[in-house]
Amino acid sequence: MKIYTSVLLIIGIALPSLCTGAVRSDKNPRILIIGDSISIGFTPFVMEMFQGRAEVFHNPGNAQHTGTGLEMIELWLGDEDWDLIHFNWGLWDLCYRHSDGKRQGKKDKEKGSLTTSLDEYESNLESLVGRLQETGAMLLWGNTSYVPSGEPGRIEGDELKYNKVAEKIMLRHGVPINDIRSLTSGFEPNWFKALGDVHYTQEGYRAIATQVVDSIEAVLPELIFKVGIIGLDTSHVTAFTSRFNDPKHKQYVPGARVVAAFKGGSPDIPSSADRIEGFTRTLQDEFGVKLYETIEEMCQHVDAVLLESVDGRPHLEQATPVFEAGLPLFIDKPIAGSLRDAIAIFELAQRTGVPCWSSSSLRFYPGVVDVAEREKGELKGAISYGPAKLDPHHPDFFWYGIHPTEALFTVMGPGVKTVSRSFTPDNDVITGIWKDGKVGTVYGIRNSKLAYKVTAFGTEAIVEQERGGDYTPMLREIVRFFRTGVSPVTLEETIEIYAFMEAADESKRREGVPVMIEETLIANGWK
Image (cartoon, rainbow, N blue to C red; front, side, top):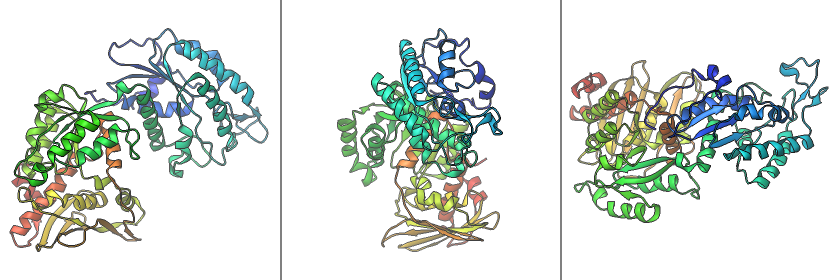
């Protein structure tokens, strides 16, 4: 689980021979995916997400319809021992084709003939499921994906009829169902390859793959990431653990399970000292999390780590044994107690090659993402406001102002040149000028009504945040990061965010004069 390599570039070459001559690993489960072009599209992402944890194979070529399945199933299964088989037939079965059809694959629902009737489909699928069960592998049925309006060879809604037949068979045989149809019916139009096309863009295939991996892990729970937490002195530890560990939670996030923790704590910070015992009891009593005396020992029992200590000062020391263990690491805000320590964490990650990132959850709030992605013409600037409570042990905005600051950077992106700050005990105004002339402002609130909001100013529109969010989208990104080793936010951008906040402190010390970001970075050890 600690090795991350890219498989996407070789998949197109490897797919036709994936089931041939594979060497059995004694360590990792072997997964076979049988299906048509939809599965060919999502399989590379499944392989990427299971790298180092499972061996994933696809049947050579396109599994087409159930008739092809009956002809080829023995060849596809070979004499291999499969731990799990994820399989589907349907889109080809319900397709109409005509010998004189002008569309690709001779699809023609007006003049063509149906490939497989519902009765034939039921009979064929019944036989195929029986044969697959003989392998002794766990089975997982992926039902047939959405047929959009305008598809030339398929009738919209027919997939529901075929899925109903398949569901009856799966229930009879006790085979769990991965509901791909419900997922894909909710896709935005730009996730389809074209209007009326059953195929998807890379974003669409990645989304399907994520659900495939979630479904596989549900029946092979040993593949779920075992997560350790460092620092039990923040409400994040109970909020995150409940979402990861409780499938009944309304915001359940599959793919990770918190199993271990190092208690930590900072006696000179009341919000740490006063709450750590309560959070610790909750993790032990409600979620069965095991405590370890050292981080080094905890790392021997987990696959990935969340560094949650509310105090940023010990983060560098606490992160070091995780890097040494080679475990993927998410560091909750603040990434560190100083910019210098944040840069040291960056250098550790670079030197060890261990995947690591940090972020405020606001970056992934749907409302903030809306502002970042919505069409606005050329972006000229943005304003982000939110609470900015101070803590004497941290640079001013590291403690809580990171949230509106992260939201600002989500919209603006990196590239700040100078930062200036106006301060009163009740409010802060931090203004950054970007290298391309954009202006971004953070308005920090204290001693008055608190709220978050970001507004972007473009040449064609002013876009305001209209909805909020919670931790759940960030936790999904954390699971994706554990699976792929790819961070959704680069450490370089995170370092710039913290340099922005450190430069704001320096501007405050200089009574509001602009401070160069480059100057701030160099002064704190950036090379």
